[in-house]
Image (cartoon, rainbow, N blue to C red; front, top):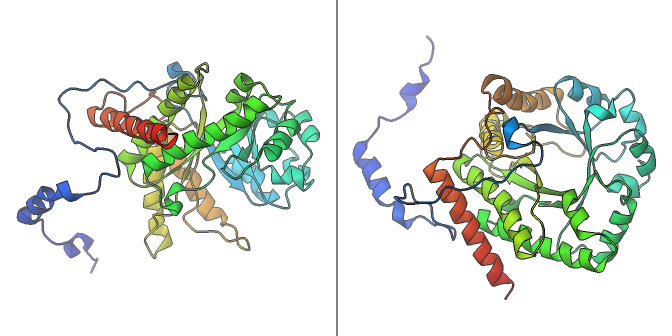
Length: 350
């Protein structure tokens, strides 16, 4: 006899539900309010994105990390547009047969430092994409100078990356992660003003990385606030407003299930949040946790790609700019997060 799985769930208990809802006031707000409804609120204005103008809807770049030369063409044939390249054995032969004008390569700087790849040779192929130096509080002027000089002749590349590590793994909430981005921008700006670089030009070469979880509503608010925070930081520093490229990566910190295929549910929710929140690029990570000795298998990578394909081809999430725009709760949460993060950032500078 077939098992009827829903019979294993307990019946809905209205009394327990009312008790749980009535006790919601004791929940932590993590320094920003989450009201369910507000009688008066100014709509949140979502800034333009880097990948395309608002008139083009809500496109995003499907990204994937490449672990071997055999994976390159497989990924491209299955819809990947942004190849993330960081494997220690990567060299130019990996890209034989690849039309560089049709893809973006996101290359880790270490590959140039170890001479696995050559900047000039790669640029001759028509390389587009990024080579982001992770800006952290420990990155000094010498390292930033070296990185800028290496890629000075490639102004179309994004070379400054913020948000190198998942904030959840370091115990940061959404507001604290937003504040950290602004503080690291200050650290970078101090170097830029003291260097030979033109600050206004380098601001066009930024990429912000954001890690999304299965908490869809909060993640969407966080991404929307992140983009608006960039505009506010520019204005505060008397810099011209411009768009910023935001890459989203699905987080595995919240994985709780012993059965790895159950992680696909979390990854789907996290990918959905990144897309609805307006990320320019998205890498849906495999549901299996790879090790250095054992990269993810093709099935895991295929499922990760297909999550995004379904959201584009079946759900049509690419059609509408800022799909959550006009939602009272989402506009309110985005504004609250933005204001709370900005206030905390200003206080940290005192």
